Amino acid sequence: MKNKDIQKMSKTELNNNYIKLKKDLFNLRFQKTNGQLTNPAKINELKKLISKTLTKINIK
Image 1 (cartoon, rainbow, N blue to C red):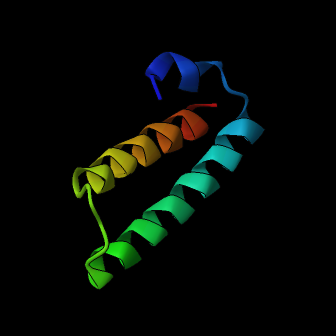
Image 2: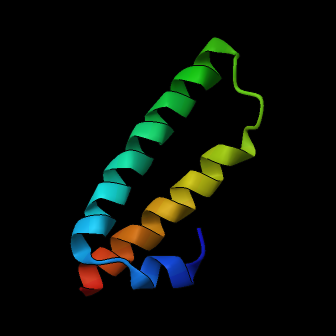
């Protein structure tokens, strides 16, 4: 997701997106502990997306 996409979202869409991203991060952490994670870089990408969405939520 690009910054342009995040800027176009409303506050409710950002909140819903934030909840979805947190669930995805939770699932990836479980996969990591079980040894099922194929792309470990995905965790860092999700963390960055979460921080971008939180920043936009706080601005709005």
